[in-house]
Image (tube, rainbow over all chains, first blue to last red):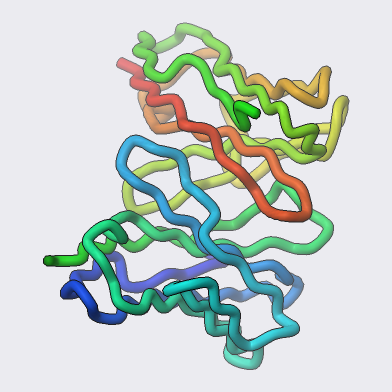
Length: 113
Length: 110
């Protein structure tokens, strides 16, 4: 049972465009939703995270939109750059399970110059 | 701060061999976790720990053992390696600010 479903599996965007990656979750007990960025040969790095008491969080060119009723959240990368080319993972966690993230399957983003 | 460190970076084993993947963190985090990453499957939790002396199973614990004798160290043991354990293994530690990953160990079991 996949508790966090991520789409699309791969995404190609032109430089300067908007990249959008979507995730859906099933467990309503989840209360922390991070996004990770991973470059080849490296470990995942925390990019941005949101809790369900807000509908949007923005950090620079990266924005998380959160829809609690639909149990969905998405990552928007504005003005996408070739350096943003990486694999992105969404994840979810229950508040009392600090070391226990449930990950989506990942999205391989390629930003073309 | 070195953050989360993992050794070795690469390892090749034969079926049936045993080995220990090392993980250490210097951030004094309570929580530590082990994940495996396979193509198209994201990262799956193997075992995790909420503090020294306390461990619990994740999604895919079979074939792996862990222990947490200190806050800093969280080794992962493969008792009898199988080809299905060929993967990239990531250790992570976390606090309220988030979960932080090590650089990974690429393991191949022949």
